[in-house]
Amino acid sequence: MADTSDVDAAIIARLSSDPTLRALMPDGVFWEVATLNGPTRFVVVSQLDHEDVYVLHGVLWERFTYLVKAVAEGASALAVKAAADRIRQLLHEQALPIAGYQCQVCRRTQRVRYTEESQDTDQLWQHRGGEYEVLATPLTTSMAP
Image (cartoon, rainbow, N blue to C red; front, side, top):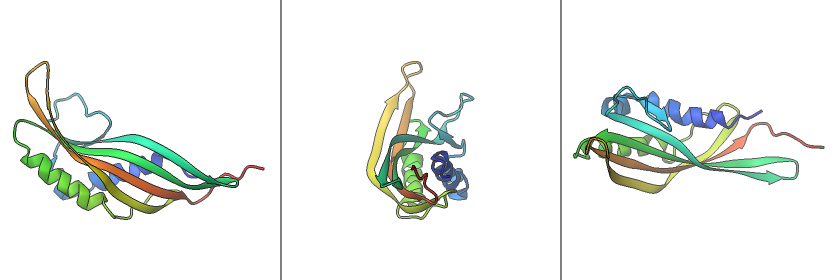
């Protein structure tokens, strides 16, 4: 049976395994929250929404929406700009291998860009990336009687 966590894992795996993105964001790719050991250049992936579309007795497809963004400490946005571009190359209109699913489409639906100021340190953090939609069909569906 398809497990929605495998879709999350496919996004993380695609981003984590890319040497170009690792060079731009060397502190890693994280699910929702970066580790607290002082990362200064990293990628964060969060699920924003999920929808099941049913037919008769099973799921026809599932729609996932993710926020995928590069984050870097400092006033310069050069690193996050390059990382956001690389993220788009890795995800937009690319097939994702997902255990238990057939990926129908992965695409960026919205751009994300903002600067955050830490209230504790007055340090600036640059955020850039996008919202990505994944449409995936479970390879097996639960059939209710």
